[in-house]
Length: 392
Image (cartoon, rainbow, N blue to C red; front, side, top):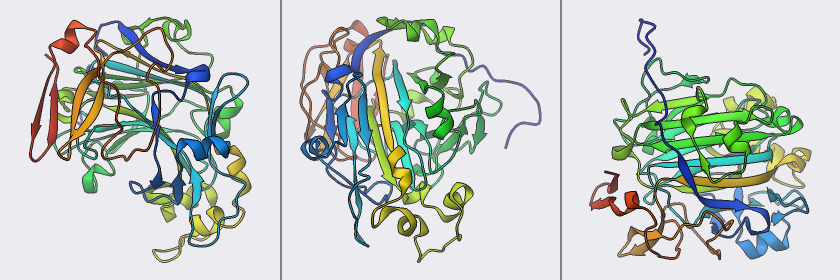
C-alpha cells in the first residue's frame, strides 16, 4: 500500500557514462544470439520455437533490404487442433553484468488477439537471479508494460518518480515470481497499432547498483546521445523514467545476477490467454478453465488475420556497460559465468547460433576482461540460490 504522505523518493539513475560493448544491427544482427528450439515451456504459450535453419528457411527470421531484423510468427501454415504454431525466440550468448544499459529500437511490434511479444532479460538460473521485462504487451493493448521478477524481498518503493503507473509492488508475487511488480506505460503509442503507425520508438533499461530504470521514447523524443549512434550514453540526462525500481527497496546486487537478452513471440499462454485479459481487447465469451477461447479462435486452422501484424522490425539492440560481457558455460549442472571479450566497433561480434533453453542459457566464447571494473567482480554459488553477483 502506498504511503498516505505524498513524499517522492529519489529514483535518479547513477551519474555515469556507459560505453558500447555490443551492437546487434544490420546484416550481422543475428550473430551472437541462439535460437531456442522447442515448446514454450516457460509461459505455456501455444507455439513451437524453431531453430535458426528453420526460421531462416520459413522466413521467420531475416534481415530485410533496409537492414532491419524481422522476427515473425508463422502466419501461413494450417495448424490442426491440439498442435502449436511456429514462432521464434532468440537469446544472447552473453550475460551482461550490473552496470549495463540495454537499448531496443523497434519500428514495428507484433500485436493482435492472442499475440504476446516481449523484449526481456533473465539470469543463468532462471527463474532465480532476476528477470527484467523491458517491453511487453498482449493482444490489442495500446500501452506496453514493464515488470521485474525476483525472489522474495525485492519490492518497488512507494511514491517513486516515474511516468508509468504501478500495478503491484511485490516483485516476488506469484509462483516463482511469475506475476512480479509491474509498471504500465502511460505515454501514448507505446504498443499496438498506435506504436506501429507512428514510426515506432526506443526503450532503454539501466541495470545498475542504484536500481533498475526503464525509459520509453517515441520517435520524436529520443535523447540526443541515443539517436547520435555514438559509443557512449549517459542515462542521467534522460529525465524521469517510465518505470523506476530504486535499490533502496530492491538491492540489485542481491536479487539480480548478470542477465541475457531475450526476444520472443508467443501465443495465448499465461498472460495473453487469461480469459479476463483476452476478453478486454478481443471480446467474445469469457471462457473457462476447460475451454481455451484464445487458442480456438486464433491459433488453429489458418490462424487469424491479425497474424499479418505479428512481427518485430528492429533497427538495433545495443548494450552499453562499465564491464565486459560474460559468457556462460555449464559444468556439473551449474551455469558458470566467464568473461567474454566485448567489442564496441563490430556489430554482433559474437558469431554462431544454436539451440537453447530458458533455464540454462547458451554456450559462448571465453576471452579476457576488457575493463578494470570487470576484473574486480566476484561471483559465488550456493546450493539453494545458484548465483549471487556483487560488483565492488
